[in-house]
Image (tube, rainbow, N blue to C red; front, side):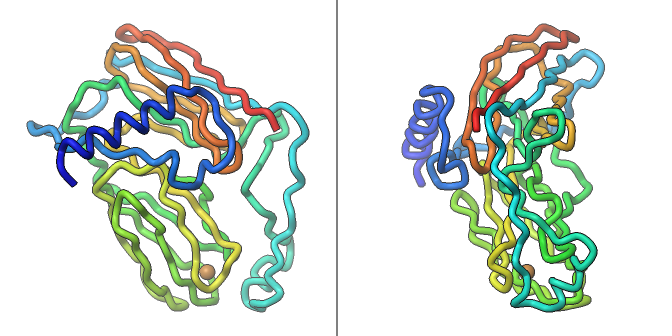
Length: 263
Ligand SMILES: [Cu+2]
């Protein structure tokens, strides 16, 4: 891909985002972003946790939450046995008791200075436990090692359906060690499936910088160490798509950016 084409691709993606909130097809190709065409040179830069700004927020949900369905694992007895105590439920939409959404991926979409952001040395882990991926949504930096574990008494076949990065597929027998991979280019999001168990899904957000978070059981997120600036903050959700918001922060300033999805 030439630099010009990559630049046009990014401009189109930003233009789409400029349409504001949108639903549907979040997991599809429309929301994928190309990384800037060249990687900045210079020594690796880490976020300034002392003088940097902080953005916190909450990803709220209004409306009627769709019921989570029990996953039918009857075709695979080891998987079914692994969940005998509490059957696994779908995680496409998880509304927390406090009216927020779990598994929203929140990241700084634009506005950062072009730095050679340091890649964490520790791998990001994606486990397969009870024949589901855990966590369901994971953030990693471009170039960071992703390790996929098999904690189940059954074989898996891990398939990262990347588009900006290389498609990645490898089987993982019972008792085998971690599979490792890394994604060199930014991609929001890389869907993971398993070619053995059709219900298994995870989404990995690959970001070219360290400013991202995933909402958990309280639906909040915190991003720290941001340089002063004006940013577009994006929240991605598997079922409800992306919402973008602008925010400007000064050194050491803390600001709140809340998102609301309607069911
Ligand atoms: Cu599997």
